[in-house]
Image 1: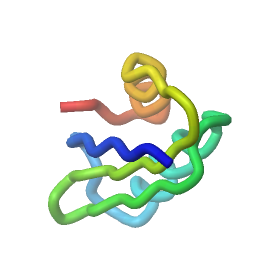
Image 2: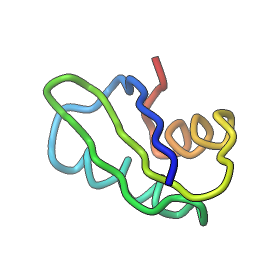
Image 3: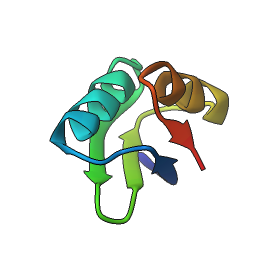
Length: 67
């Protein structure tokens, strides 16, 4: 399993956490998503390869930004 961590801006509540988690779990490679709301950080565990642009697109389509 591979892991990526990234900063995500615009999150401020539980709904934001749910939206980002749902958007990332929709990517077939993603196994687990952990969102640290306080530090605006997302940790993604995934299988195979996962392109950073696909991750950013999923987050941006959910209404948030990758920092």
